Image 1 (cartoon, helix red, strand yellow):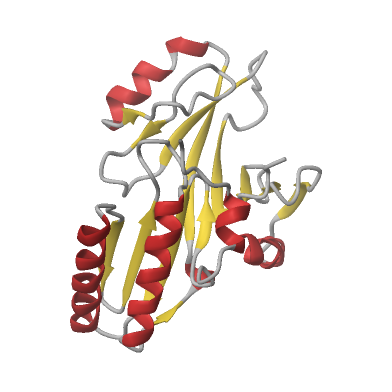
Image 2 (cartoon, rainbow, N blue to C red; image 1 turned 135 degrees about the vertical axis):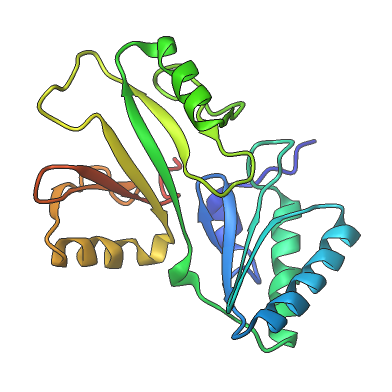
Length: 223
């Protein structure tokens, strides 16, 4: 039986206050204050991951550690991620390391695809990304994923005709659901324009002064 859980179930779970769901994964950003403190923290994370036989992606920088967990076998979140997230947060508290939920984010590049399946091989070759199974979008193509998880995912959006007077690539910025409206307000204050909030809180479409579009996105698109 699958132990898959929804984004809402993860978010409502006890002990997940440090974590935010971005797309199909749960992410936490911790402020360590130094490289050495970060090393000690990821050592603890490694021990917890080995004990659980469930391994997150960990990014160590001077002053921060970012952790992403998701279950590759189901392509999303599971009870295993919930349990590991709780243990990692507990370890952070023991080490006096605090979480920074507002700093959590992810980015996707979305390409309009009139030509459908003729588009993906080009982008796969030029970027060196790999298809992400189970992520087929409206163009019937798998999104392309950086194998190291460092570079933006590239997704495809089927369109019926070329939009010659509009940009045909836009950026999806995934943010913590409880900071999305704050991010939208900051974009507008910085000279951006709200194109539509019809789909909020799943996403807001914004544009710069020349009409180039970006979407601020959250997990809150589940039925």
